[in-house]
Amino acid sequence: MRADLLGFLECPHCHGALRLDGATVRCENRHAFDVARQGYVSLLTGTAPTGDSASMVAARAAFLGAGHYDPIVTAVCDAAELVLAPGPGGCVLDLGAGTGHHLSAVLDRVEHRWGIALDSSKHAARRAAHAHRRLGAVVCDVWRRLPVRTGAAALALDVFAPRNAAEMRRVLAPGGALVVVTPAPDHLAELVSEIDLLSVDERKHHRLYDQFGTPGRTVACEYRMALPHDDVEALAAMGPAAWHTTAEHRRERIRSLPDPVTVTASVTVSTYLLR
Ligand SMILES: C[S@@+](CC[C@H](N)C(=O)[O-])C[C@H]1O[C@@H](n2cnc3c(N)ncnc32)[C@H](O)[C@@H]1O
Ligand SMILES: [Zn+2]
Image 1 (tube, rainbow, N blue to C red):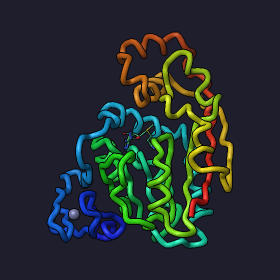
Image 2 (tube, rainbow, N blue to C red):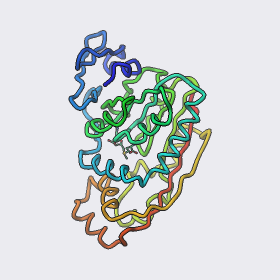
Image 3 (cartoon, rainbow, N blue to C red):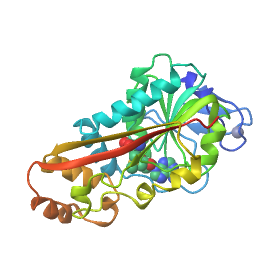
Image 4 (spheres, rainbow, N blue to C red):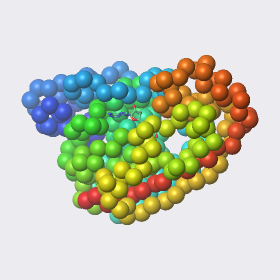
């Protein structure tokens, strides 16, 4: 955790400013949080929410590393650049950032910005902490008050992750925006009947309008992927199917598919000017 990043964060107990003291993050009211050996800091209070397991995070890293979502990453970076180029001050936040894959691509695209990956999974935070030199990883629950200072973010990203609209509005700076990626109805269509690939939350497309109104910009990103069986397995193991099916059961279903199998990727990248 770099000291420069702490200026964007706040103490989850008293909302005071944070500073780095060796391997400990402290606020002026003596609340203290250890920086983990792996480089992330947990600013979680109370009971831990569910987050992706170690094997889910490893599967996500493998799938994203194979490049199958690169067109989505590019669409996210394009949207981010349009928000950040006019120059609202502040960091880039990624809520439910997972491995930090999308956030580090955005940081590569725009120089001189700091990024903060928020996730409830320490396994995800471990990876995100090393994803980019201008990125800090924080474990927290995005359904509670975020440990982020009011108005600290120029851009908030949310890629297939939970969305806390009130907190997103609070942490955005004037001129800042939210970029959200949601699956379109035909996303991974060839596989959804075979394997349960999307969480209920990810399917709730219509909720976006209720939460944020009409987007300032919407881009549909649709293409076909040729997925070898290993990558279908990773795709299944990184999603909700991992919670209620065994790896053996998933492999059995996958064996009946062509190798490679053609699968549709179809998402919407929306930009909301919330402030
Ligand atoms: C579908 S994954 C998406 C990860 C990343 N955005 C990506 O696209 O690669 C959802 C992520 O949200 C995290 N998550 C789930 N519930 C959360 C919560 N209440 N607070 C913070 N993160 C949460 C999970 O641990 C997981 O990393
Ligand atoms: Zn405090």
